Length: 264
Image 1 (cartoon, rainbow, N blue to C red):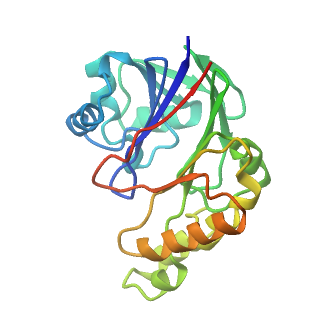
Image 2: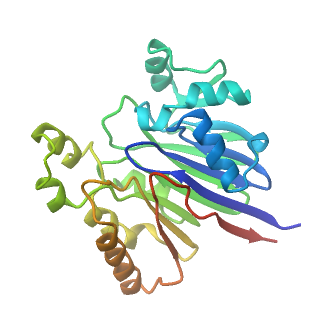
């Protein structure tokens, strides 16, 4: 019997983030940054059965990652997995669903067929995490909010079959934007967001022989240029001799393509 991995970004950007991973008809969602209604509609639009969903994994407490988490988890009677510090923060805001499972960043845990490795990323949240998720022989690496690709992040994200990596802004567009100076400084900082150049420069370290799908995430609608970003990313993949990798620039308002991998 073949093992089947399916990965789909239900949406990614400052207005909401959610990435679904399905392995042999069991699934998890990383972040629930849309309303419960929108999450269900997005899942069904890509033929994912909400009944197969076992949990939501939360990267951090920002609204574009947790917006629908409480209602969504309670409606489907599934737990929210969050780091202990993040869960404490959300409990004080009354944003936790009835079922919560806490984890410690740096400690792997099993969730059905998924072996989840949460790792620390540099972002301006109380305890932010990226995820390396193993299911069967497959590995999925996800980091949608990070100020820089540290050695630790590279170790977890590298050698993934599917890689979801932030490429938030074009520095020149950001600096020339009407955003206030304090916000520009936050985004540009080591605990802010990853810009196009840093994201693309990381390809050489992160992409391996097994990588088949690369999704660029959390792309700013105001401070980025999608056509320019695609051209830069494709040029780097050509330079690396990796035109075999499927490239997708994730969108805010609509789900991405469903990427599938099978083994024996």
